[in-house]
Amino acid sequence: MPLHQTEAFILRTYTLQEADKICVLLTRDAGKLRGVAHGARRLKSRFGSSLEPFTEVSVTYFQKETRELVSISSCEILHSPFSTTMSSELLGLLHYLAELVIEFLPDHEPNDRVYRLISAIMEATAGATAEQFPALARYGEIWMLKLGGYLPGFRRCAECSSEFLRQQSVWLTSDGAPQCAGCSARRGEEMNADVRLLLADLLRQSPKEFIEARRETGALAQIGSIAGRLIARALERDLKSILILDQLRPKVEAVPGS
Image (cartoon, rainbow, N blue to C red; front, side, top):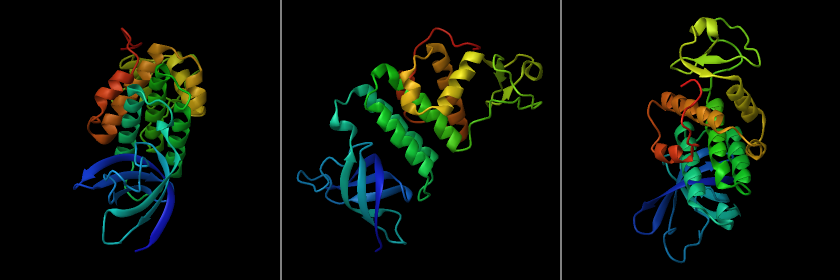
């Protein structure tokens, strides 16, 4: 069996028999993998706390061409979100981000951009407050959509290709395509200049920079609403952690254009 070693994030674990675990990993070199950690559920397991969600590890594993699951030999902790106090809000955020990665990424396809995205988000969580977690969720949603090719361009009208002016509102069709006032007849969801500017900031800033600035609650909520519809459209179903997502979204009485 070929021996491999790479950096990885632990996305999720499942119980397998009495002593073992199945682990879903986002690796830097091999993309998303599923593997068996033998003896991981024993009290004196050699894996210790290295298999906790979103722990970054140096993992060594064996792989047979005829088997879907790899065999995990060892995990050495590089960074752990559990080095500080773990709140229920942060656990909810990590659970949601894990599901995004698991659902959007195919197995065994390296994706360095997604790995760097998760690394940057995890770095931002280290100093983030619970009030900033919704902004991190929006950051992860929009960038996973963009890297997966599911995020529409918001610079030009999808119908007439005219470029939107900085202070111009756009209207979104049911599938998320942006249109100018003329082509849309002002029907659909209005996305005003403030929301467009917030989205532009999200796409050009690091997650740490994005959450450090004070964000208007309604604009952030609308981006979450748009992202949720695009995700459901891309996957052809809602994510299982949609309730956690709703809890992370800011609560507002009305969203502009709704």
